[in-house]
Length: 225
Length: 254
Image (tube, rainbow over all chains, first blue to last red; front, top):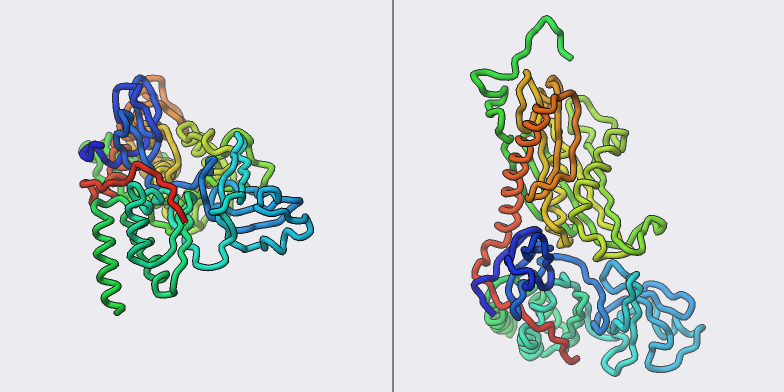
């Protein structure tokens, strides 16, 4: 990846005069690749693409997200997934069989769940599933929220950032694709974890962030002990 | 109109009453991201006009019957504060603000990729804090920047400004005096390639005069576009040496 060509673009900016290089966040007009978004332009695998600096989470199949139960309707839970679209979790998508009249016993309104997007149709009806060992109800820990566009930065290249955080903070951390983050550990560690996450969100676009965060954690931990 | 016996002059030594050249814009000031609650926001001053734009969305549509199955709808509310004009304006929507809202929405809607967000709504609110002729153009400019700030996919930004006719001469960006006592006012909005999304005319112009007015207004829009673009870019300029924002959206283990 060429680092020099990363720069801020606004919608309509010309990125390339080769229409074949149109990637994510771009469109082609008059044979030129133009940006669709206000964000950072970069070339990736021979394509120009633009990563937005702001925006909402749009669910896509396979995403693991953190949701809160909003409502219980006939054999479905309606789940807020921090998106313009609400998710539907059918009782058959739970790991064990549940009776219709027992739905609110298992998942109450307000409960947080870790959940996967199973399918999204063209009208943006979002079907969710909990049928995986790694998914389930969040009974411990805390949930925080960041801008979904900052999620890749929080995870880091190949998980570098998140693995560093987990190790340094002694916490269990999960980052949902919808920008909700779950942390579990002792209280002091969780405080520091959430503080760090917010710093990463704010400085997501800067360089050498992982090293700076590492340094920040060292200083914070020293002050604590 | 003013008393006919008194001849009013709009020019003094080739300059306008506020010292501008006929083809000069009023000074512009823009600020992005001024509201914490909104998804995107922009405060803009164009001369004595002060407007603030807030964008929310895409979000769920309420009331539900307004939603479209295949695309997002765009709602635009233009509102003048009661203190925005000399004589107190009765608060609330009126015929004029309904019209301005409609034409402004239609000026912005063509560049927004509404098909990306079916069954949702993009809400744009424009509040006029101080008015001095040309509030709809200032509102559109601010709304366009706020939409970009909200991360909404758009084909381009939209810029808007007006041309008018005073004392038989075509001028750019008329201020209040020129608008009230002038002969015509032509607000336009366009994208940087020159495609027009708003064109209104109040008053009378000959064909040649209209052409001249369009020419002036288009040049004005280009200047405004550069300002809009610069303010958005400068917001993140402190990180010109860009970090390794990552390629892999890794899905990590719990």
